[in-house]
Length: 264
Image 1 (tube, rainbow, N blue to C red):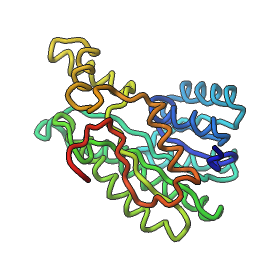
Image 2: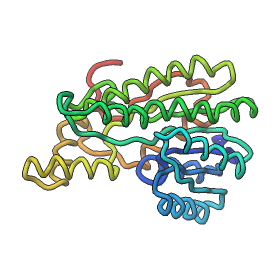
Image 3: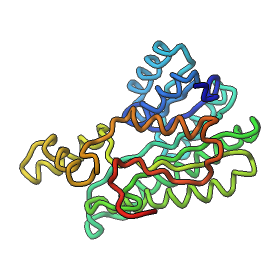
Image 4: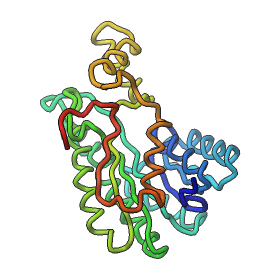
């Protein structure tokens, strides 16, 4: 099937690992040129080169901490130099947390707010002008099922991801007249390195192995009793960015293996 993505230019934050890397590879498979943004320069450049070698598209790796406005601006300048513009922006950078409301500091709240929420505002400011010049585009924001159905041990993550749902709706309303479609993806259990990190912390407290902890999480929360792979999740981003998803505007899509309770 021709999804209309060949020749498109895509920027993915958090693009060197997990969901972001799988999304980048999926776009490249469809013939899109991709710019991967991540903090670790060596890793992001290695993954970008691997994508170029595997799929024959233009692929660049950019070291960027999206919680810092000056680094987003530097990324914009790099992309403006190497690409003719941006057709698709995937705001995927983020991290899980582990705290209680009573023991989490103001600095920690502000840091994650910058990473999850303000980075999405700032990348829009940086790249929407490109999309307007090109006659339109697509923005996809990665939230989480925890924005709606929170886990007890990460109130900062839950709250900032919930804010992304509203931000995505506001962006969609503002940009739709520019032919820019904005949607949000809310994954459930996805077996990323971040989950292994979280499992390592919480499993130690419970006196079990990380795998035992993850198996218990899947048994408790996922209707189909398993984690998704990042590659499975990436296919939804491709659909929403493609011509097949062109009537989707301002929506939030749960990809959760049956975790969500009730109707939303």
